[in-house]
Length: 528
Image (cartoon, rainbow, N blue to C red; front, side, top):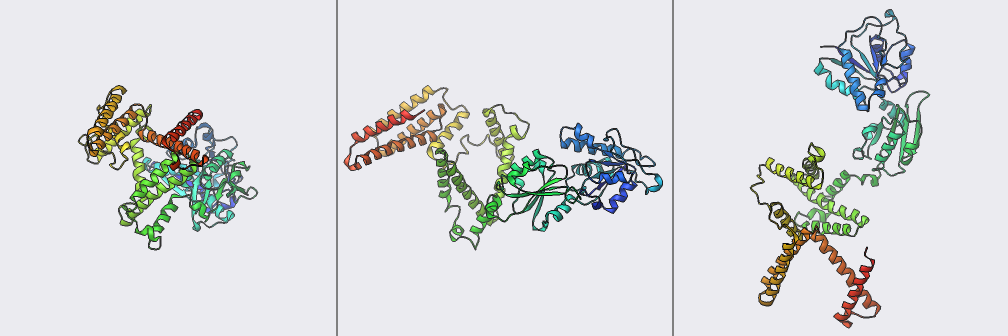
């Protein structure tokens, strides 16, 4: 071995929380280094003449906390390889804060020394200490022995002073890396390292994604430290307005059994669907199969599209949920047969999104939407190759669902054909094709049977879809807009009939056409 490092925990702040084993190790150390001297126990070291060097200077030099932790780990590894000084503990190096160390005690008053540096950290070395994790990852490869001696964690005081039992369900999260996806309201949540009001503000915004604005949260400052401890309960929206945040501050979010909070989680949805399909669940849900609710999927999708077209946020919220329910039910059926679960569905989707966006999650570039789409198609082809499918041997037109509405399917077929050059260069020939198909339809209507007429009508519609592609309009959206326009103008006719005390039996086409033109003029008058 090329040296050793001993890491000790200084406890959560009060000198009485320092363990006897850690204290003896500190007294016996040749060289003591502390991550920060901004800790109440530092007074105890000074009172007993223990000299130490602080890494506080690195916080001022580095651009980020990860850079600080990297620098501390690298410096400790370097120090571990240096020969151990004899006699009293080494004086602070040039990087230490002025006045950080007290005078060293005499050799005769101290226990036998340890050769490697002793690195002292607040709390417990294995709780919220990134530098210790870096040392664990790197010391063995560099031939350095690493010894870790625990101390009382700030969590010990949190359990005592805040008064909750972690056996009820508990999670510890870092304020710097807090995300709404990590939050589980059914668990007690302690958020550590809430250093200042800016960090508290970030914590508040993340919590508000899962909790109501007035949810009660608790701020703990210097828990267990005599004369310094403060415990403040505030509604969530006031979290960052409370004064006093510092190195020994944390936030506790008590667990909740409130159903409304649980209902905001995906896991709760999975649980509910599982119950509905269980023997104790809903008789109707239990009887359903993929085939029996297939049409529901289509219907719910179109209802969601209608909410989008109506620019109806409340409707979208509800209809999107109905679409998700269809995914959940079909996935639950497969989970029951042991093939896959909805979590497998999510995993497959996440992996696909990551793989097909190399310009976002990889090294590829994309300066515009067109280049991004080309990346997508390239990675899609690569996926097929990895599955043993040669994309060059399949039809260009493969991959379009056969059950798409006919207008949408025509649009997708034409787009795929155009990618390999089967397309006109400009709009002129496309419009000429429409005129040709109109003429053929007229001829079929005059002389052919219904089947031939239907085929010619299909050709005309197909040609019209091609026009939409050339002018950059989605044919489905264009027709949906015309449908909505027709409905509005027809409703105008119905209203005119009502105002005139008439029914459809008491009017004629000429009168209705006049009202239609009125409706048309009205809509044009109010159009932007």
